[in-house]
Image (cartoon, rainbow, N blue to C red; front, side):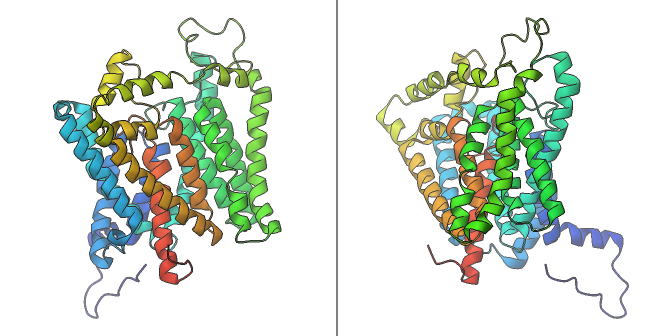
Length: 448
């Protein structure tokens, strides 16, 4: 960060208002604002407040920083160019195919989120391109995840088990009780952020703090009974070891990987074996709650008993909206297919629960091809970064992709029903693009 120039001789020092304005338009404020926005997925009351935060805390500083330093290569980076093309294609198809939905309040909110999404991506790029910006964002996600997990565990024990015995843990810091699936997925992302941070820190005290955080967050994830988060954690924890072996010795890689992996595994298997002790006793479950997914005396059996939770029928409904060859090519557009799904399920389901299936339904072969090219390039670059000693982004990207196989609505707005796509997908994608560009500037990574 450039130093603040001293006042000219003979002139009075700037007043409080001038200093506040200078800070509000500074790089430091941009980092703080962006970190707060990411933390909002875990610890901010609702999406409206989070968008207001983006506009007030991030955009003024972002504009000021753009004026000082430019876009720092954003428009020349293939990942960012493909991201822009993907968003524009989905938006264009939606406007052409489903203009009648524009009068709906949710469509208008989605469009507002689509307009702000490139702003969010640009701000992420600027922060990740400078100094330790990306690391600060990563650490912020960890502490926000810990706050959400600790708050969720207290709320579950003191309130949920009393009002609804056997209820799945919810994050009380968002919406007064975020849906258990979104709670599990977002806290799971923070678990992986903590796991890769553990390998980056060398102080014993901090490693103990991170290890404890992983244990608390893993327990919270298990109590959400979210299978998508558990599946993604299982896949993502397999990545750090092979990635690190390409850049450090076996002994060093082992020291970085085994403690967080062992802690997470101990919590997961401990819950599967003994979590039934936390289930409500016979007679405690009322009729209103008995039809919902609940904590039982055999959590593993409960996981399998749910099957696909109706996903096959959701996918079938979406594919049926592609009733002509040109819709298979270009997609049925945003918004319309979800409205059909919602109508057919009696208002119970409002998105397709797979970002990749939804992308094909919304934007067809063309949109899916753009997304595939974007992800292939990101995985390639993240793998190279991992071999250069930066495995964190590959780990987080793998977690995000594993989650989005079975959940997610769209990657084209900051306002979605699923809510977490911009944390688990766009954050690691932009961090990969920016870290790659930083490495090119330092000539540490060969051009890809």
